Every structure is written in C-alpha cells, then in structure tokens.
Image (tube, rainbow, N blue to C red; front, side, top):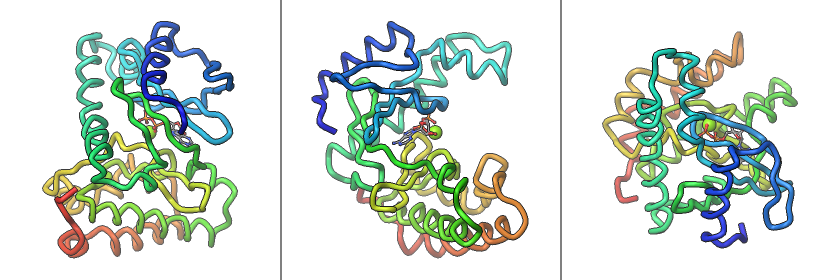
Length: 235
Ligand SMILES: Nc1ncnc2c1ncn2[C@@H]1O[C@H](COP(=O)(O)OP(=O)(O)O)[C@@H](O)[C@H]1O
Ligand SMILES: [Mg+2]
C-alpha cells in the first residue's frame, strides 16, 4: 500500500495502452494476473493487489457473449455507469466516512484503478473447507454483509465466493465494491425480493443441507427489521 497515487495513475494508463499483459513489473515487483470480472483485471504480488479498469474494448468483448448486437458505444456506457459507485466509494473513503479495513484497505486512484491488500477469495476458502467450516464462513459472511448497513451500504450482488475474501486476520472483507448501493430503498426492495436466493447470488454454489443453512442464516441477517435498526445514512 506504499505506492504514491500519481505513479499508480500513470501505470494504469500504460497498461491500457499495452492491453493489460498477463504479467507486469511495477516498482521492481512481479505482478501476476489473478482474476478478472466485468470491471477490473486484478494483478497480485504475495500481499498486494492492483486492479486496472477494463478498457471499453475488453468490456465490449465480455458483454457480447450475452448480446451479439451490442455496439462499442453501448458497452462504453454500461462500463462508465458501472464506475459510478466506485467514484462514490472514493469520495466516502477520502472523507473517512467508511472504514478501510472491511474493504481490504483500498486506495482508489483518480483513474479508478485500485490498490488493495491481497486476501483469500472465499471461493478458495470454500474449496478447502469441511462442512462445519463452510457453515462458519456463511455465518461470518452474512454478519459482515449486514454490518455494512450501519454505514448506509448494501451489497446487492451476493457473489460471496468471488467478491468477498478472508484477510490476514481471518476476517471476511468485501474485495469488490462495484455492486454496493447507498440507497436505502434499493436495499429494501432487494430484501423484499430475497435477492440472495437469485441465480447470481451465493445460492447457486450451494446445495442440500448447506443451501438450507445459507437460506436460514441470510433470513436472520437480511430482513426489514435488521435494516430498520441498523441502517444509517450518515456515511
Ligand atoms: N484484494 C484481492 N485479493 C485477492 N483476489 C482479488 C482481490 N481483488 C480481486 N481479486 C480477484 O480478482 C477478481 C476480480 O476482481 P473484482 O474486484 O471482483 O473485479 P470486478 O469488479 O471486475 O468483478 C476477484 O473475483 C478475485 O478473484
Ligand atoms: Mg467481482
């Protein structure tokens, strides 16, 4: 987390020109591509992650898998809309309205590239967990995601395996804040629709007993009563 912001900004620009190589050298360290979603390519060393926004062309190529007729301009619009919440996060973090540790200590640069602590994505934690440990992870995830209410934040994606991870202290953190909302009404309607049981959410990864456990736990932490009690719009 030591790199000055200016350097990161120029690095991000260089990467866009070179088209995000699989491996890069920055500050004399080797960064290896460790993951990609719809907004970022993530590069990691042993303890840090650098996330570079996807170029419009990359976003276009990704979205076209679902919509062959999509134009580059449409992809650009989807992409730039997707970064609205990242800009908002940057403001809130800069104004110290949100704690950094629950987001893997992010440093959001003005070009929206992100430096962050490297954490263990929950998918990897689940892969080597037994049934009891999986239940504990689900419980801690639900607790953490509902703790966000006190900052007026709500994670709408429920992609717990890819977007949440375990930090060095063994605490669950949100590594991808691209699907946060700070809108209470949106949070309320997500709760009413039980969005965590959607295909996109965690439930698609669980079955049998574990799915039933996930459903029970989510109902305890994600309901209107908890939202009413904990939500704060001060952040
Ligand atoms: N801080 C991190 N520690 C470890 N892996 C990470 C970290 N940030 C991102 N990744 C990996 O990169 C992937 C994509 O990053 P993410 O922030 O989720 O991008 P997107 O917003 O495009 O989905 C994640 O699913 C995860 O596998
Ligand atoms: Mg993601």
